[in-house]
Image (cartoon, rainbow over all chains, first blue to last red; front, side):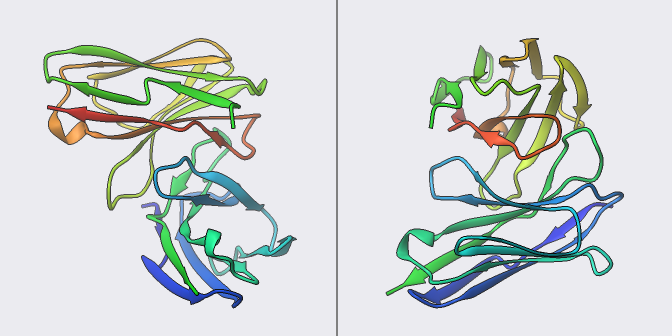
Length: 110
Length: 111
Protein backbone atom coordinates (compact mmCIF):
# COMPACT_ATOMS: atom_id res chain seq x y z
CA UNK A 1 0.00 0.00 0.00
CA UNK A 2 0.85 3.67 0.01
CA UNK A 3 1.97 5.21 3.28
CA UNK A 4 3.36 8.59 4.30
CA UNK A 5 4.38 9.11 7.94
CA UNK A 6 5.25 12.33 9.71
CA UNK A 7 4.99 13.44 13.34
CA UNK A 8 1.63 14.89 14.33
CA UNK A 9 2.89 17.84 16.36
CA UNK A 10 6.11 19.67 17.10
CA UNK A 11 6.99 22.68 19.22
CA UNK A 12 10.00 24.95 18.78
CA UNK A 13 11.27 28.31 19.97
CA UNK A 14 11.44 31.49 17.94
CA UNK A 15 14.89 31.87 16.36
CA UNK A 16 15.70 28.18 16.62
CA UNK A 17 16.01 25.45 13.98
CA UNK A 18 13.48 22.63 13.57
CA UNK A 19 13.56 19.50 11.41
CA UNK A 20 10.33 17.82 10.33
CA UNK A 21 10.79 14.24 9.15
CA UNK A 22 8.78 12.31 6.60
CA UNK A 23 9.06 8.64 5.66
CA UNK A 24 7.23 7.09 2.75
CA UNK A 25 6.40 3.77 1.16
CA UNK A 26 4.76 4.11 -2.25
CA UNK A 27 4.28 1.97 -5.34
CA UNK A 28 6.41 4.37 -7.38
CA UNK A 29 8.29 7.61 -6.93
CA UNK A 30 8.21 10.69 -9.11
CA UNK A 31 9.10 13.34 -6.54
CA UNK A 32 8.38 14.55 -3.01
CA UNK A 33 6.74 17.85 -2.14
CA UNK A 34 6.45 19.91 1.03
CA UNK A 35 3.54 22.27 1.56
CA UNK A 36 2.74 24.76 4.32
CA UNK A 37 -0.83 25.25 5.48
CA UNK A 38 -1.87 27.93 7.95
CA UNK A 39 -5.09 27.30 9.87
CA UNK A 40 -8.12 28.05 7.72
CA UNK A 41 -6.04 28.62 4.58
CA UNK A 42 -5.05 26.67 1.48
CA UNK A 43 -1.75 24.75 1.31
CA UNK A 44 1.12 26.63 -0.33
CA UNK A 45 4.06 25.01 -2.09
CA UNK A 46 7.41 25.06 -0.28
CA UNK A 47 9.77 22.62 -2.00
CA UNK A 48 10.19 19.75 -4.43
CA UNK A 49 12.82 16.99 -4.39
CA UNK A 50 13.20 14.28 -7.01
CA UNK A 51 16.92 13.54 -6.68
CA UNK A 52 18.83 12.68 -3.50
CA UNK A 53 20.32 15.55 -1.60
CA UNK A 54 19.54 18.92 -0.10
CA UNK A 55 17.56 21.72 -1.76
CA UNK A 56 17.90 25.10 -0.07
CA UNK A 57 15.49 27.97 -0.45
CA UNK A 58 16.04 30.83 1.96
CA UNK A 59 15.25 29.78 5.53
CA UNK A 60 13.76 26.49 4.33
CA UNK A 61 15.68 23.43 3.12
CA UNK A 62 14.44 20.00 2.11
CA UNK A 63 16.40 16.76 1.97
CA UNK A 64 15.64 13.50 0.18
CA UNK A 65 17.05 9.98 0.39
CA UNK A 66 15.23 7.75 -2.08
CA UNK A 67 16.98 4.58 -0.92
CA UNK A 68 15.73 5.16 2.63
CA UNK A 69 12.30 6.49 1.67
CA UNK A 70 13.04 9.53 3.81
CA UNK A 71 12.82 13.28 3.61
CA UNK A 72 13.04 16.15 6.02
CA UNK A 73 12.13 19.82 5.97
CA UNK A 74 14.51 22.09 7.86
CA UNK A 75 13.32 25.49 9.03
CA UNK A 76 15.95 27.94 10.27
CA UNK A 77 15.63 31.17 12.24
CA UNK A 78 12.08 30.30 13.18
CA UNK A 79 9.53 33.08 13.22
CA UNK A 80 6.11 33.16 14.87
CA UNK A 81 4.50 33.19 11.42
CA UNK A 82 6.03 29.74 10.76
CA UNK A 83 3.40 28.24 13.09
CA UNK A 84 1.42 26.11 10.65
CA UNK A 85 0.90 22.57 9.42
CA UNK A 86 3.59 21.14 7.16
CA UNK A 87 2.43 18.54 4.67
CA UNK A 88 4.67 15.95 3.06
CA UNK A 89 3.39 14.54 -0.24
CA UNK A 90 4.72 11.97 -2.69
CA UNK A 91 3.97 11.68 -6.39
CA UNK A 92 3.95 7.94 -7.15
CA UNK A 93 3.64 8.29 -10.91
CA UNK A 94 3.24 10.74 -13.78
CA UNK A 95 -0.49 11.53 -13.55
CA UNK A 96 -0.10 14.41 -11.10
CA UNK A 97 -1.56 12.31 -8.29
CA UNK A 98 -0.15 13.22 -4.87
CA UNK A 99 -0.37 11.14 -1.71
CA UNK A 100 -0.27 13.30 1.41
CA UNK A 101 0.82 12.58 4.95
CA UNK A 102 -1.48 13.80 7.68
CA UNK A 103 0.68 16.83 8.31
CA UNK A 104 2.86 18.07 11.16
CA UNK A 105 1.46 20.95 13.20
CA UNK A 106 4.35 23.17 14.24
CA UNK A 107 3.90 25.63 17.07
CA UNK A 108 6.55 28.31 17.42
CA UNK A 109 6.78 29.83 20.89
CA UNK A 110 8.40 33.12 21.91
CA UNK B 1 -3.56 35.14 -4.08
CA UNK B 2 -6.02 34.99 -6.99
CA UNK B 3 -4.33 32.28 -9.10
CA UNK B 4 -6.97 29.67 -8.19
CA UNK B 5 -10.42 30.76 -7.10
CA UNK B 6 -13.26 28.70 -5.67
CA UNK B 7 -16.93 29.44 -5.13
CA UNK B 8 -18.79 29.30 -2.91
CA UNK B 9 -16.44 29.60 0.06
CA UNK B 10 -19.05 28.14 2.42
CA UNK B 11 -21.97 25.84 1.64
CA UNK B 12 -24.60 24.24 3.84
CA UNK B 13 -26.81 21.68 2.14
CA UNK B 14 -29.31 19.03 3.08
CA UNK B 15 -28.86 15.40 2.15
CA UNK B 16 -31.44 15.64 -0.64
CA UNK B 17 -30.07 18.80 -2.25
CA UNK B 18 -28.05 19.14 -5.44
CA UNK B 19 -25.31 21.73 -5.54
CA UNK B 20 -22.11 22.43 -7.47
CA UNK B 21 -18.69 23.68 -6.47
CA UNK B 22 -16.77 25.78 -8.95
CA UNK B 23 -13.04 26.23 -9.43
CA UNK B 24 -11.25 28.54 -11.85
CA UNK B 25 -7.52 28.85 -12.43
CA UNK B 26 -5.87 31.88 -13.99
CA UNK B 27 -2.37 30.41 -14.24
CA UNK B 28 -2.49 28.80 -17.68
CA UNK B 29 -2.02 25.35 -16.20
CA UNK B 30 -3.04 22.14 -17.96
CA UNK B 31 -4.02 19.96 -14.98
CA UNK B 32 -6.65 20.44 -12.27
CA UNK B 33 -7.49 18.50 -9.12
CA UNK B 34 -10.17 18.05 -6.47
CA UNK B 35 -9.15 17.20 -2.89
CA UNK B 36 -11.10 16.54 0.29
CA UNK B 37 -9.68 17.66 3.63
CA UNK B 38 -11.34 16.32 6.77
CA UNK B 39 -10.27 17.03 10.33
CA UNK B 40 -7.51 14.72 11.60
CA UNK B 41 -7.12 13.07 8.18
CA UNK B 42 -4.59 13.49 5.37
CA UNK B 43 -5.50 15.59 2.38
CA UNK B 44 -7.28 13.11 0.09
CA UNK B 45 -7.12 13.27 -3.70
CA UNK B 46 -10.50 12.80 -5.38
CA UNK B 47 -10.04 13.51 -9.09
CA UNK B 48 -7.31 14.57 -11.52
CA UNK B 49 -7.95 16.17 -14.90
CA UNK B 50 -5.11 16.57 -17.37
CA UNK B 51 -5.82 18.44 -20.63
CA UNK B 52 -9.52 18.24 -19.73
CA UNK B 53 -9.50 14.44 -19.50
CA UNK B 54 -9.99 12.62 -16.24
CA UNK B 55 -6.84 10.65 -15.48
CA UNK B 56 -7.47 9.72 -11.86
CA UNK B 57 -10.64 8.79 -10.00
CA UNK B 58 -9.62 7.82 -6.52
CA UNK B 59 -12.52 5.46 -5.70
CA UNK B 60 -14.84 8.37 -5.03
CA UNK B 61 -18.58 7.63 -4.49
CA UNK B 62 -20.81 8.46 -7.44
CA UNK B 63 -22.63 11.14 -5.44
CA UNK B 64 -19.61 13.28 -6.36
CA UNK B 65 -19.48 14.04 -10.09
CA UNK B 66 -16.66 16.13 -11.58
CA UNK B 67 -16.81 18.15 -14.77
CA UNK B 68 -13.97 19.87 -16.60
CA UNK B 69 -15.35 21.87 -19.58
CA UNK B 70 -11.99 23.50 -20.37
CA UNK B 71 -8.50 23.78 -18.92
CA UNK B 72 -9.43 26.78 -16.73
CA UNK B 73 -12.61 25.52 -15.09
CA UNK B 74 -13.45 22.57 -12.88
CA UNK B 75 -16.75 21.72 -11.23
CA UNK B 76 -17.76 19.23 -8.56
CA UNK B 77 -21.45 18.35 -8.71
CA UNK B 78 -22.90 17.10 -5.45
CA UNK B 79 -26.12 15.13 -4.88
CA UNK B 80 -27.61 13.08 -2.04
CA UNK B 81 -24.58 13.67 0.17
CA UNK B 82 -24.08 12.19 3.61
CA UNK B 83 -23.10 14.01 6.83
CA UNK B 84 -19.64 12.38 6.66
CA UNK B 85 -19.07 14.28 3.41
CA UNK B 86 -18.80 17.48 5.42
CA UNK B 87 -15.25 18.72 4.86
CA UNK B 88 -13.10 21.34 3.17
CA UNK B 89 -13.00 20.75 -0.59
CA UNK B 90 -9.87 22.10 -2.23
CA UNK B 91 -9.20 22.64 -5.89
CA UNK B 92 -5.66 22.81 -7.26
CA UNK B 93 -3.96 23.27 -10.60
CA UNK B 94 -0.50 22.56 -11.99
CA UNK B 95 1.49 22.65 -15.17
CA UNK B 96 2.07 18.99 -15.98
CA UNK B 97 3.08 17.20 -12.77
CA UNK B 98 4.93 20.07 -11.15
CA UNK B 99 3.92 21.89 -7.98
CA UNK B 100 0.22 22.30 -7.42
CA UNK B 101 -1.36 25.63 -6.56
CA UNK B 102 -4.38 25.40 -4.30
CA UNK B 103 -7.50 27.49 -4.12
CA UNK B 104 -8.92 28.71 -0.79
CA UNK B 105 -11.41 25.85 -0.58
CA UNK B 106 -15.13 25.42 -0.03
CA UNK B 107 -16.19 24.56 3.51
CA UNK B 108 -19.11 22.13 3.01
CA UNK B 109 -21.54 21.18 5.76
CA UNK B 110 -24.12 18.47 5.07
CA UNK B 111 -27.09 18.53 7.44
